[in-house]
Length: 387
Ligand SMILES: *Cc1c(COP(=O)(O)O)cnc(C)c1O
Image (cartoon, rainbow, N blue to C red; front, side, top):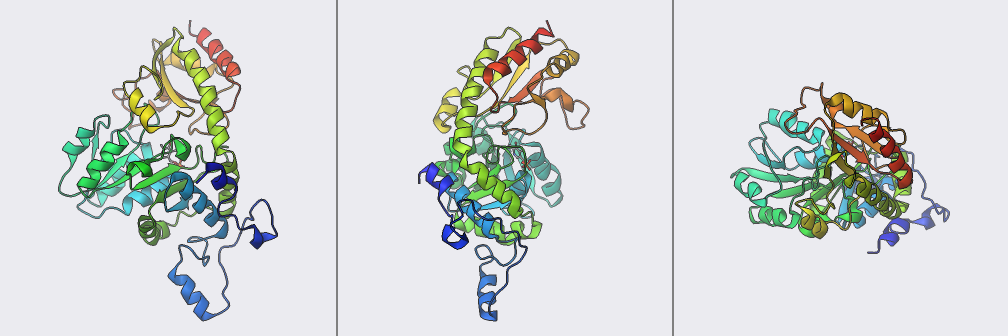
């Protein structure tokens, strides 16, 4: 299905709302019925019939159809955060005594779900260096039920060979989930590569304006129904109709935002690559990336997120550089219209931080819709401060 058709037309039932071009926000928690029979029938299909907004809301329903189509899945769920999406999708796959294989250093709260919460319920996880498919193979146990991917990682950008890991999992009757937040459905379609379930933090590119927190799960009808009837409804992390409407609006410009962000990022990356103060570049589409060929093969393009290590003698110099930046907001998150900087050294006091995995001079950037020439001037000025 054509991408612009999906974002502009699919699932919009304008006949039902005065031919309004923008869909209505159905700000209602529940829905009334004309007869007991009609209500009874609706309760049977709470996923698809508006009965109660935690389960199905008409504004959210439009969004679900568009998200599913964009990702090439049969159905989708929209939740109140990306972490809610990961938690519901993962927990639905496992029971006490089961084993999970996950990429090393996944998103922080995914790590906590596996390493703290699920561990309490006797679900164990092996974290593997995901750059070699055989590491997944070697980690498989008789009780392995799930493999969790994140390609690429959102700080150091290691990739997995998605097709190969998906095939390995299928051959061993193991379900696969990928966190596809980085690439968005515009740049990577894991379901078409054999992955069972794709999740995104929709807070990032799908929403793109840093004004809402949301998550999505895309999969087959069967997987979605299972997650819906269990963890989606019991955890109850539904998105509000208003936030769903904002995301619908964001989807109209998703493709052009991605395209523009990619161009801006290429510009900034090529400046940084040739800068004498840059020690190392972490960007999937950097030709020196050992996984460059794989990145090209799996992803249509690279969006605005990348990291560098700067040549600095100590944390104080890193702080000087970052504090001197004016156009980049010093903030967490990414994927919005604005450009961001996130130096990993802000985590040095946190108990789960280890220098061995994340060097002190590692700095992540998210490039937004700023003029790249202005961003480069800003970077140039900041590098001047650590000469
Ligand atoms: C932000 C993020 C999440 C969590 O999403 P929220 O919307 O913040 O809950 C999950 N995975 C990745 C890769 C992220 O960057």
